Image 1 (cartoon, one colour):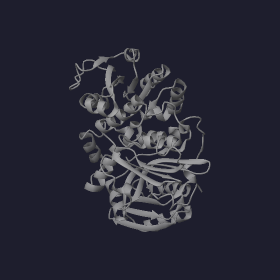
Image 2: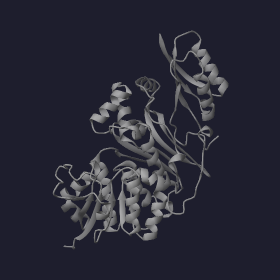
Image 3: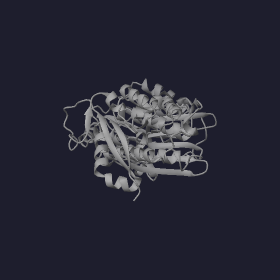
Length: 437
């Protein structure tokens, strides 16, 4: 029998994902040894509260509150950073890489803001930086980009990258729940934090899109490059109108590369009911990548929960431990070119528009006139209601700047009872008119 090699792991953080990882390593040790030929040994484990009870782990792991206790262990092979947050996690990753120790992390916030410099540091020190779990939980999309499609030129990404918001939107559409009720259900099931802001505001998928697009396009990107808005303004009525029109609503992260520029957006989109992205329900994630040679690729899988994320982290640990993940990053993450970011107003598309107003004569005529004189052509209209009335509109293809002008003009009308809202309609890149207008 081949000799099993021991690999020492320093664990930073023992919350949901950290604890799930520790249990995986313990419970599946025999399977890991047989499959990979390594025995993973968790040494010091950094936690914030030494007194906290951690089911099945107290007495099994050696806890400490000092980062140095973990990083200064003898024969430390890999550091796994699962602290969350930014500053302490960034400090820990930098210290580990600077010492030549490989790192695995799921921290999309740190990677979105500092990933390029951390990759360069790993390259300079001859160690590895693994972060599969930072983008889409257990979906192995970064591994595919690193290896199988290393030579592919990708030009489009459309993805559902937040399991919490996808669960909320699924329940709003399927069960007719209002946003607040669907959010409370997600919290009850452990899919949303007590403070869900990062998820529902879109900042979580914003960071994930930066990490993913940087890898797929080989370009230098920042979170501030991404136009971002979340799902908090959506209502059950919007989901119902979308269904009446033959769509469902998903929070999509979109990246499109043109000749010398990139368009980056995170916002709700109306997706045709027959499209694969429309069928992705509850807490699942999905990614559609389009490339010059491969055409369209589709990935899907669980996008929330400690165990799927821990599986992705374990995959990176084993890749580094067995040498199957190259220690030197490829061309996609070193010497990245800074592209021109397409302004939102320069994009174009079809849109869903909803106007809620106090019922009075000639409102529909006024709304359509404002749209027409702003350069937005109406395709289809549905109007309902008595004392409180709604107009739902689908437009023909228009410039985003024209739509924003129309929304500003509508907002000034005295007959509105709520601010108007509008969301884009998803179109495949082969249907869209290429490039910003």
